[in-house]
Image 1 (spheres, rainbow, N blue to C red):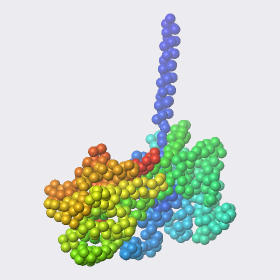
Image 2 (cartoon, rainbow, N blue to C red):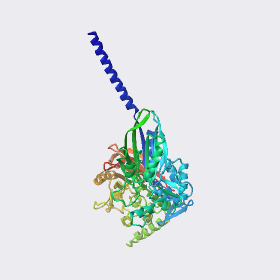
Image 3 (cartoon, rainbow, N blue to C red):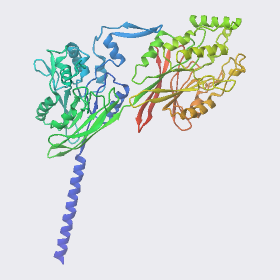
Amino acid sequence: MKIKSVIIASMMFLMVLLVSCQSTKNMEKATSDIEVKILGTTDLHSMVTDSLVSYVKEEREKNKNLLMVDAGDFFDMKSDEMEEWFTGQKLVRIKDGMPEYKKIAEPREGEVPLAKEMAKLKYDAVTFGNHEFISNDKQSLDKLVSDFENNNIPLVSANIYKQSGEKYVKPYIMKSVKTDKGDVKVGILGLTINEVGEGSESKNFEEDKKARELGEQEDYKGKLYANDLVEDAKKWVKVMEKEKPDIIIATVHSGEEPKNPKNPGNRVKELATTVDGIDAIVAGHTHEKIEQHTYKNNSGEEVIVTQPGPHADSVSEINFKLDKKNGKWEIKDKSSKLNLIDKDVNIIATADLHSHFSDKLTTSLLKERNNLIEPVVVDAGDFLDPQTDEMTKWYKEWKNIRDNNTGKPIGKCPMVKSMSQGRYDAVVFGNHEFVSEKDEFWSDKRLVDAVIKDFEQVNIPVVSANIYEQSGENYVKPYIIKDLKTKEGNLKVGVLGLTIKEVGKGLKNVNLQEQFQYKDKLYANDLVEEAKKWVKVMEKEKPDIIVAVVHSGEEPKNPKHPGNRVKELATTVDGIDAIVASHTHEKIDEHDYKNKAGDKVIVTQPGEHGKYYSKITFKVNKEKGSWVINDKSSKTVAVE
């Protein structure tokens, strides 16, 4: 019995030992897994947006060993800085509708601004696209390469050669990613489409292909040429493998082959399926978005292809999971996805202009339109006043018509002409549109009607939801819905106009309907109550953003004048995302409130006389078919 007990006890001990060893082995296996992450962009065309820089900065804070690559077509003049560098001129003002430029340098003088912008992203490798060639000659391309090198941006394109047969830039680089289990070596191979030129006149596909080749371009003939990117990939991967990388990434300015190709040079499927040794490809050129396409190469190994969208629209994220066995890293899993970069939707607002509208303000407003998504430009009222010579002359003409009851139509309002040059999307009535600052120039409905008509003729709607005719009809539009075009479809911005009820002077009989010239003609309802009503109406049209443009200010501690209701509006009316305030001539970058639903409402106010404007920025993205506001902020911007 004792022997049997000893045998059973020994067997149990061995079983426990085996289970313990297996558990330890599994734990070691689990803990030995590490991840390597690579971010990729392409087809930036000079659009290094603040949203892209913020996104990459946040990712680098989370992962110190993150790698970043670009697949070409980064060079272009779509940004303001690059346009000024290309032309050597800066837009300084718009006078009588005509732009005036100031020479600030010789065209393309000094370091290319894009180098500094892209340096913010700390790229590990950047590949040439066709735009780097067609937007330069050989001399200016050399300068571009030098500027990028001076900003620590490595350029890699394995199949681009000098006429002598030397490499023009590095074919690849090796990066060492540090982990607590040892370093992982990542090789990054650059490849560029050979067919960099614009389309030729030839209708024959092969002739067109030949005419587009780098070595056939006038600026590069006898200076640079490109080899076949697939054949060079086979050559250079073998060279890279001698350095024993654990991962090989190809950044390729070429896209996947379409079913019916109109343009030559897209070879990514061929590259993925015929070149052994590449683990993942970041594609470009076609402006398509590819989260992940998976292919098998000649050895039966999986190759993943991803392509981020153009213009800093999205970033490809490639993730590798590796396990170390016998001192060597093995890729256990790999995947890629697209991370959409927030799009900036801007509301640009002026207020309390009082007839002051400078050429510089026009220029500033037009420059704000230089974004991928056009801003919505609005004014929060008190744009009329006899404070300039031109407007005083116009008011005198009105006074003569009014006093003599001539019935003659008043001439075009100079302020409307000025504001039309600023390309406003909507303006809101202020109290000065109804009651002039100078008593001798008192207005009546005839003058206001004429101003509305002038705005209509230049396609600028006047919106004020709480102003009514005696019949109960809205005097002007209560709101507008502006459709903004994006690559993901239109985004709707609702602009609700609201006007202070107390338009008159003094503390008694200040309401619109109490003014003798508007009695039994116009009246104003409570702006907060009207906001509740009209926001519900607007929501039926499903706007993605609602901005209230309000001729009313924040409530002061010791009010001298009635009608400032903006805090109340922000905290009691659900559905409004941001408010442009006015009337009090304050300058407010951003004040934050919460409405009844607990949602954040931001308030900004641009000050007076066009010295500043407010800029509200909504960071949005499309998720499951709907636009989502991820962040919002506002600031005032000085007019230069």
